[in-house]
Image (cartoon, rainbow, N blue to C red; front, side, top):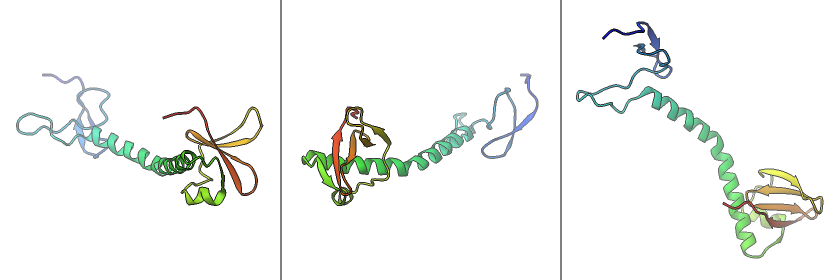
Length: 137
């Protein structure tokens, strides 16, 4: 078998040199064991897994805070606490500063801080109104 490409390339993951078998290869080929079956080590898979993990690690803190906020608001809302004090929100584990988006209510022109399917409207210095909007999961 004659190879079209006869140059060596450096693997993006492990740094080893390998014989290029086609023009677009960026990683060394998977290692084969004695049966000719691909072994667990695959640089391309390992590289992409680490890249995905780094991305998940960056968003984990935000996702955890959003879930905690949603859980606290869900508990308060299901207990029919529609108007609550800031202290009650904090006791429920809600981080008022970590909301998804702020929007203005079209009818009352009030600022609504959105936490997944719930929103908070500040009534005065110490009281908030919990609203539930259409975004359901």
